[in-house]
Image 1 (tube, rainbow, N blue to C red):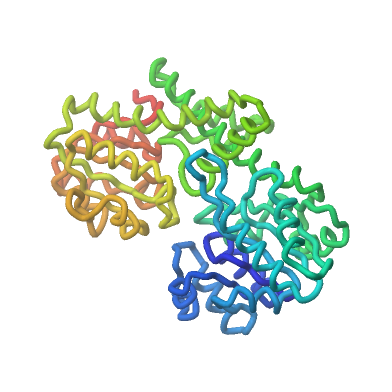
Image 2: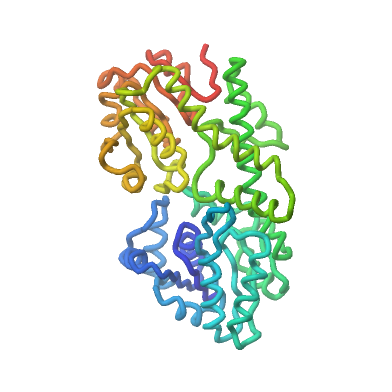
Length: 433
């Protein structure tokens, strides 16, 4: 199949590279000239495990191409995937400016029958609008639109693309549904074929439910702190119930990133637009917003006053295995700590350069490694769940610093082992005997 992917962010770039790896001819198009120039050189604009190798291999084998000529990419393909960003606007709803612009460009350059597939996360009713925009700009009545929401996790996106739980397709055209379904048949997973609106809502409902699990276990962690129970044990016990499952029951600083915050907010806005108050979702957002302050309170309660205190903050990315700092709770915690007067020494394996664009260069020390960050610190704050933070050499920490306390915002350390080595441990709902 000849495919064009419009947009080379996380979703577009990974989708295009994976489709090419499946044997299709793929053109990835973007108006960002700097990004396309990097990709043509084999450099990645984002950090994603295995992506560089996947892109370079498929470019070399002549299946993957990059261009800034969006119109040309539209004309040369039989299937067009829209994968541009849909950030939240000031009102909390999804900003569809980029999606509408691509739909206009498709309509103006449609030269034969094509299937337009929406990968971007869009509110209920958007694909119908996309279809209308294209129809208003085209002289041919020869196209179909399909909603095909993505369920990729940053840090494991390539694995996820090849190991999906299900494929969701929505359209008013059986011909288009069957054609796009053929792209995924080899994955041997359920393919859900529905109308536009159900497909759109599946994506939002899925992310909102996962966010609900995160906020729920964070509330349970608050109860664990008060009752001296251990939230990890509680979550393990819950997780064995097949109706519940263990995933997304990890207490910590709350959810962040480019998807959950905007998708939850957009779904709540959709409910409001329909004159329905989604009270549960309002609670989910409220719990998530309060969680970072709950963690900071643990730090201020320990020290009394953070003025003049030096804290080693480990992590700036919103999660491990990515350099993405969009809506990063780690960044927000660092800002709050800095506002309380603390001196910050920060390290992240991948996201440090991106963090500098937000935190600046003057009041934060950017360390070259974990132990450089810890040297001279009064306390350690673990803010992102990188594996190397979980493997922290506590004996080495004792030798190079006078740190006495570790604030584990991601519950990745064993409290008992930390205590045995001689440190105080402060986690989220963890029990220490």
